[in-house]
Image (cartoon, rainbow, N blue to C red):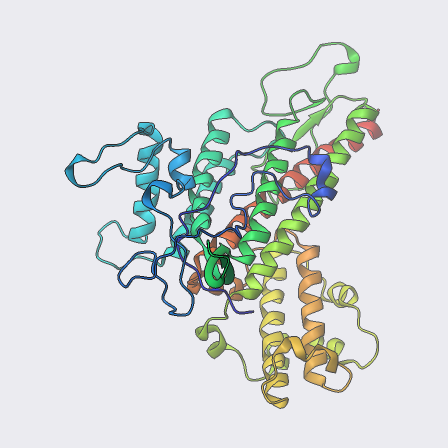
Length: 466
């Protein structure tokens, strides 16, 4: 899919952030988040400028772009959030009508200086691209805020404030990523002419509000763990000393795989029925959020162009990539089951799963390339219906099913070689923001699910002892 052209739009608006109950997940698609950063604007001004050299001039002679007078230009969302206004007047007599807080203004300076420098503090131009810099910024912010959060408890106020404030600054870039479209303008004399107007880019308009909604829901789930019937063995406080509140021996189903994580502990009778039911409901909600974030992330990654270096490193034969065992299962003409294939492989660790995912993904693109070449370079999206008549199409489709099943069986799987290459060489800022934002939300949702599983496992062990 071709990505629409983008530019800076100073007429965007930002609404206040609001929260909604985590149980309303099913309404996410039908009811977009109310604090959507931008609204598609179809109104155009009757005053247009097409003069050469004008900052609002149209690059297309046939499509004059509407321009508002300086006094009527809407205030950019970022300046509104900082409580600043444009400089009024011109020359040395310009004064600011408002002043931002020193802390927030310093944050903006620091963040966007690093983005402009591409993380190269020497200023020599050897830094990374803007898309990679902003992707790293979101990833590092997530590690700073949530990296040490391994318990089911509300996020500390200072960390929540940091997450809200700095993500708001990083996502404000999307307020200015727009696409041109042809619109009509009615002049005072009643005549109509065509002009070029702007609107939010379609992928950002659809995905960003959904991601922000998922973000709010995850924080609400964490905030709901105010008073709980479980605690962690590293906690110093204890419950009452009566027999019903005697703590059971802490147990964990993780084994020694992740020994550093805190282990939850419950009383000997276990959790009450209402607490167990509430915990299961929150787990189901977090699991749905994880699936939604993963779907958005996969969709964004699929739209990012495959780097040439990865294409050059692909093997010439897909069978050599996956090996004889996997190839025999995938090439069998009968019914194919990716779950049965993974059971036969007996993958026991995430390292083995990642290695298998890399090999299957590489073979999938080899077979896709061969199928496109054999059908006059027809795009893959148009070849899926030829599965029965073309073996390469069948193998590529089955490899895609195996890859999806593998990611579902190991939800905490690291990035594959192709995904990491796409993120590294991607130049599209909008796609970088959507990919990194969805990735960190996917990780947070998965951590919440695993933490709830730990508590449920401890509860089950306590009830067996009792």
